[in-house]
Image (cartoon, helix red, strand yellow):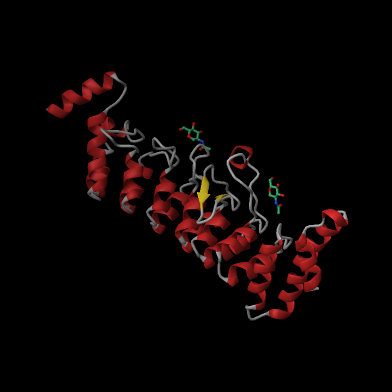
Length: 292
Ligand SMILES: *[C@@H]1O[C@H](CO)[C@@H](O)[C@H](O)[C@H]1NC(C)=O
Ligand SMILES: *[C@@H]1O[C@H](CO)[C@@H](O)[C@H](O)[C@H]1NC(C)=O
């Protein structure tokens, strides 16, 4: 009775908190049968896509995927839940399923036509989250369903040394997820991924490519080898980085092809030194010449 009164009051504010709460409760209890019965009643059906309740950010569909309750998710979709409805942070149910690492829910949502990129007003994306978490199966499904492989985050990533832009490749590298890193490259991630967002660039000291970031961050040599295999530009901005690069390469098991990459990288530095007049040439050029 209390509930009904409240619901009527809420309805004047164009909301139906009570029904939403009850739907949500059935979902959280994973009671798909009750949920199904409720959704046959108009009073519940009409709030199926409402966000609601006190301090609740999402819709019943968000509640279902946040717990991995697949059967409830299917009941909701069958009764007209919108697959790409957003919560207060503009997160779609797919995003919540990825964050919760529920592969079956991710698949069900993608098959029901969920946008694999989530909602563009959200700061993050399903691909970024899967890459950061190292969920290779979920990442594969997102990419197979057409998710943007070079999806850009609207926020910067803090590494141990600096703020860098955080594309999926960056995140896979920084968090050490080699399989995800490889998968992203196989699906066409740009091995020279570099920030181009003017707003982000203004708050970064110096933009860094993935290769540079891997070197600075001390990623395993496999990451660097993959970047080279996928055609990353090996011209590095400083002699210091180039030397780290060469040390990395010579310490790996494949020195012959890698040494040529090392030579290329050094040539890049050398060419830039040549551009300067002799009097202005920095001491590093002398060191590079010595190495040759
Ligand atoms: C993102 O969510 C807003 C608010 O619900 C909606 O108007 C918009 O169409 C959504 N955009 C995408 C790309 O889904
Ligand atoms: C990365 O982007 C910045 C800013 O757009 C640019 O200055 C820099 O040269 C780029 N680096 C590479 C290696 O492309």
